[in-house]
Image 1 (tube, rainbow, N blue to C red):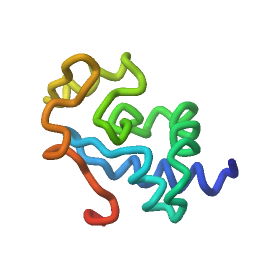
Image 2 (image 1 turned 90 degrees about the vertical axis):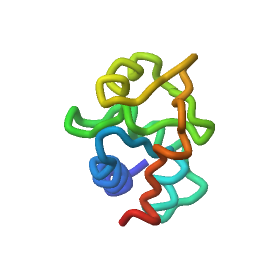
Image 3 (image 1 turned 60 degrees about the vertical axis):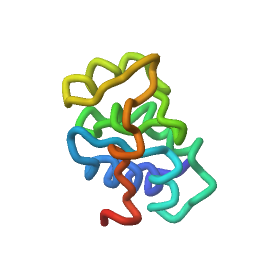
Image 4 (image 1 turned 30 degrees about the vertical axis):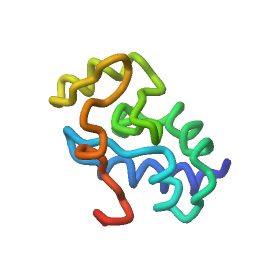
Amino acid sequence: MDAIFKQQVYEVAKLIPKGRVSTYGAIAKAVGYPNHSRHVGKAMGGCPEDVPAHRVISSSGTLSVPEFQKRLEEEGITVENLRIKGFKKLFWDPMNEL
């Protein structure tokens, strides 16, 4: 995975507003690699602190990193059994929002 791809992923993730979430797949599509959601996940695993990795989740609305639950709840997002309650309403699609 190259540095340009990672930087593009981070720039899109930084645009996700507080109280909203996006998915690995949506970000992959937004940076021009629609079938690379796993690469987005790997990039997010080592992202800089200024990137809100806790706002990027799986397409099923499930947290991939349980430790992110607290940060999401601090933004007003309800999480039950590692699933975002009202996921479809909170979903931020970079293809529509940018």
